[in-house]
Amino acid sequence: MGEMSNAERFLNAFAAIEKEMRRILELKDHRPFSELVNKSSRVNPVIGRYRFDLKEYSELRNAIVHDRSGGEIIAEPNAEVVASIEHIAGLLLEPPKVAPLFLKEVLALSEDQPVARAIRELSKMTYTQAPVIKDGKIVGLVTSKMIVQWMGLSLANETFDIEKTTIGDLMELVGEVDGYEFVSVNKSLLEIPDLFYRWQEQGKKLEAVLITQNGKPDQPLKGIITNRDLPVVHRELE
Image (cartoon, rainbow, N blue to C red):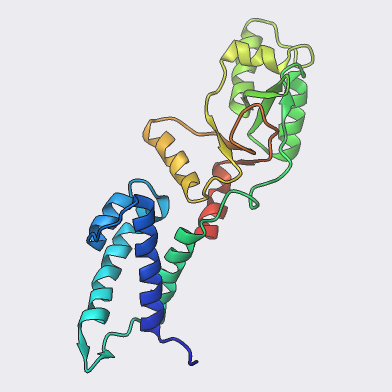
């Protein structure tokens, strides 16, 4: 059997995408491709990301399928287009997860540890935040910004003591940061940038995405994703 032409590869990827969108929407009857894209884009991050490309590829598909002479395909997509639609099909059928890419040992601090420990650990690792644990459960984040705020308040109150003040005391004084979300190890990598963007749209900062087995705060930490990891996410999705 000879190697498939670009047109055949394009049509195979197109058909796989169309079939998967119908499965996502649980449709039995025929619907226009553009309608499938519009509806699927609301519930699937891959379709949402590539919806405009898919609509353009739909026009190319129509040219390949309908505009034939003597049964021969007369529209042959170039290699770049074929690679693009096959990439979209691959992301849709086998979307990359946050695991194993972002599974790693995470610096976590206990609520009863001194602020000095937080300063030493964050400085040593050049981190700007770390999850805080209490009774085996993640209860918040301590950030470098919080530490600076605490320093200002405690110096003004003449209560500055980095060895006697606990991380829990610090969080109580400056207020807990709510800038984090939990995701499971099976979370689609495509959804991660959207999490950060949604927080930005609300005028807030998502400090960290915390990874546990099922996205629950009382489960052991398996990984973490921060703003500085977003370039890695985007490279993985290219």
